[in-house]
Length: 205
Length: 241
Image (cartoon, rainbow over all chains, first blue to last red; front, side, top):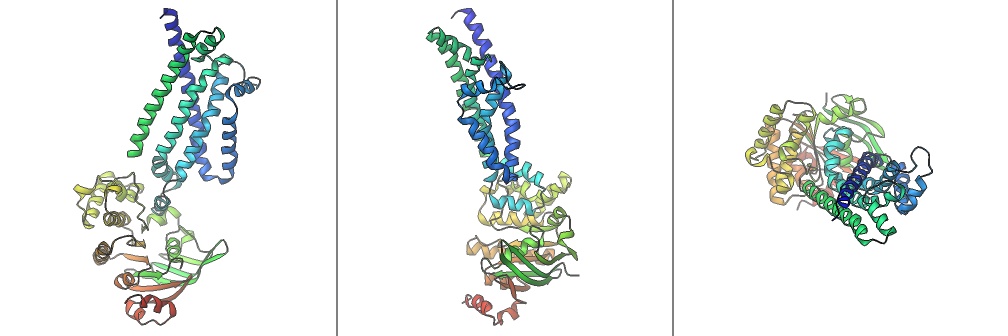
């Protein structure tokens, strides 16, 4: 392999990871609390879950395109990419947090209440721990999809492994395409395996 | 002053009348068994005692104070509750489950530990063997004992039992009923015990209240109850032989 290709590979992989990790961090910070809120505010459910579902149906390239002209959050570059990735990652996290908490055994919740737990204690000590495997399953799905979707970031100047892919497509250079696609796939597999392992740990506890 | 008093308590939800003008008192040391069919309102009455539900009309008084005037969290921690299907926390060990209310109350860890070991011992579950187990590693009867230990943990003056032995096999059920009687003798707790099993009611109750479609039809000691002649009482007593 050419040394400049190796350099590029390291740099773009790093960029890719930064995009994915930032987007996932933001998506979790928004998605988990919102999912909790949904279990307590019936009126919000349809709206929020509907919004998140609609976001997922927009083709990713189009979503990037829509965001570019929007002031403050739009424009060319990493910020726009991260916002788009967050919008995509939101649904699985939101939905799984909501479903995970709602499916905690009613008898267990009732006894938590009967023991005199405050609703905060019940959330922290009972609902969240018991919903954790489901919530994590949502985070896992979102992470794997985000790693793939982030390759499109290159289209709007966001960098990442997509740069190889777009360059390869433009110059009909299969090696370049693979240099982007293979590491992205490997990262996705590693994330899937790693988070799956944590998930199994959690559901056994 | 009675420990618990129901004054003309009615409860309706969604236009359905669950309890109608129920009146009774529970004195310290008594075991009042609320007997009735499914849907007779007995669990609702129990949930009103510790403020999980509030009357639509009338008042429930605990230690002379209406439940609506109690701090809702204080009231619940002041009353032990043994729930249908146990409701142990599956992700807590036996020790954590039993020590729950004392921990919530901010007892020092060493005191909680001591209390938990003592209670498990009392319930016939050797602490060294059971402390670190999870509920799924216990039999139904053991789980129910842990449930009782948990209700007793903060030493509440009043205990509520919601068909606690309903799901157990007949042999374990009788064992636990005996243990209940021993506990009552040793700890002198007051209890309200909900069941649909007339045998259990006669065995455990110092008084039996028969609920029929939300009305308290009979409230009497077991001897008097055996001679009750209302339709529902006859139906229950008829199931004895």
